[in-house]
Amino acid sequence: MISKPLNNPIITVSIKVYQALLLAYPTKFQQEYGSQMAQVFQDCCLRTVRQGGTNGMLKLWAVTLFDLLQSVISEHMQKETDMNKDDFVRLGGWLLMASAVAFLPGAIGMILSETRYAIRSWDSFPFNVVAFAVFWAPVLLAVGMLGLRARYKIGGGVLLFGAVVGGLLVIVGTLVQFLTPHYSVSETYYGVWLGGVFLLYVCLFIFGILALIQKPLPRWNALPLIAGGVPLLRLLAGITTSSLEASLLVIIAGYIIMTIAMILLGYILQADASQNTASA
Image 1 (spheres, rainbow, N blue to C red):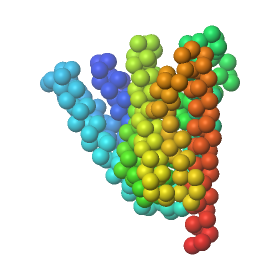
Image 2 (cartoon, helix red, strand yellow):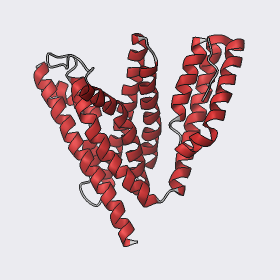
Image 3 (cartoon, helix red, strand yellow):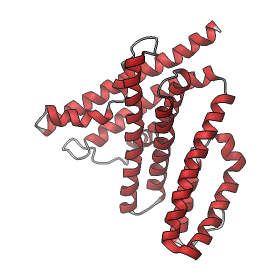
Image 4 (cartoon, rainbow, N blue to C red):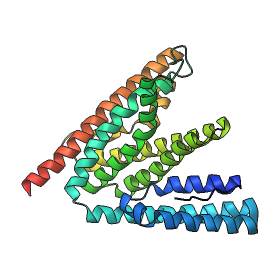
């Protein structure tokens, strides 16, 4: 979006992060306004650094993130209105299934990374594919959660907040890890990615609690609760097991169960949308 290179590292990193955040907007919006928004943000960065230095940039980012969050939510709500609802819900169902399948192998690899079972090198092509899939699978989950929100009228605010904010954190954390050559910075943004993933699953878990109470799904209303069980998984492993290997088995088994639940939830969502279309 920006062709002129900038020498100030604060401005350079800020612009790259802002461009990553713009990916959270619907594609049509990005094509129409993305370049102009990035250019305006660059001008604001230049002026802010000149006048206020680092402290000024922190204030600029606080205002920018608040405005961006409101704008992204508004645009996605408008997109849902414009798009055929059943098509969007069906897409959400398929993406929930895809996210579950893409996330599981890499998640298990990360769980084993500090053990004697760790993969020694991720440089081969199959492991590169697994790594790519696990980092981007949460973005598919975010869209799938928007599909749940469009179909079932409970917990809409929770699902929207989780999908937008969690999705933004995942996108920023993933992109900056690959953009920066510095390990310490990459490690920091791995934490940003992990925070986004955690937020997505927390919001899905809360939706699952509401689903158990109000029973909006045609069947198996416990599925969202099981599929969003990441926040409780490590706690459960720590309480029920004493040895490291037993704890790992509990966590891996939990991820497998969550994956199955997510696939079933996605299947029910897209089938429910298809049935609704046929009835109409």
